[in-house]
Image (cartoon, rainbow, N blue to C red; front, side, top):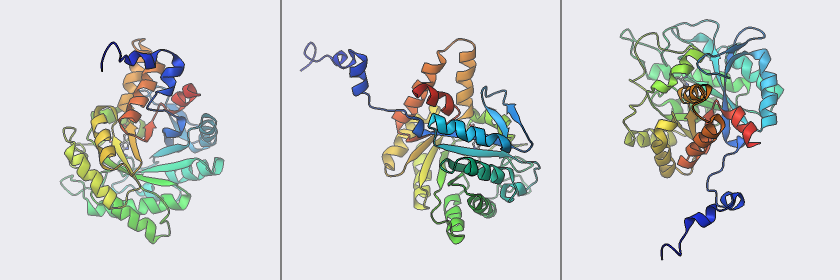
Length: 325
Ligand code: PBG
């Protein structure tokens, strides 16, 4: 049977009909809001390449937590800008480090807020790389794992709810799982940036978090944008190592990867990171009046969910939650 008996337009006839046949939903509960925290007092510094995003000092976080609660956004992911950088990134696991202080402030302000910490070295090292380096500037793998173990235990002690290693260091999930379990944090989940590409879309973030490599690039650990089969291998390894959530990053140029990872591992919640460059592109076009900002943002987030992401890390979280009401 076909036209004229079959008419798909029947199901699009009224807003109410369209609503009951809608397949993908978008809810503020799906969002994880990235926060940049820095030292100082009363600091709310605009990030020029990410209009509407700020670097905040710790005293600003209680208000932020309250706003997120009223909007129904359940979770944040923290990025810290340390006071000092050195080859190891010592502030990364210091008890009074910037992220450690931010976790305590957020949990004090709203114990129900899910506080996720990004776990990497690049914001803390003076060379800006995601691990310890050898003389040739190569990111050392196993030596870096020991630092990551110290960082997650430090975050756990401060009350973090989830740790999220983002460095694409081999074995990072197993190393972190072992360290947490050994210190009495066997209940703490690991959200692995399992599939993270060496992407130019991180440009604005590197300004925001001051985490750009001082030389070279991240291609010896982050993935080649041309590869998708390899993404399944990365995801499988992290599942085997005990990851509780998987992530694909960036989101928009990798919707096929999101879809394939979700198909292969439907039993794990999957996050997608709608990264800084994706945000900046929409903001720039909207500022020029070239796009309908609200519709484009909601369509973008819906597309990421439709591809298979359960959760979206997005700088649009607050505005989108407000629009979704
Ligand atoms: C590494 C990290 C990066 C991002 C999140 N975690 C930067 C990088 O890998 O160079 C990028 C996020 C974004 O662009 O929004 N700690």
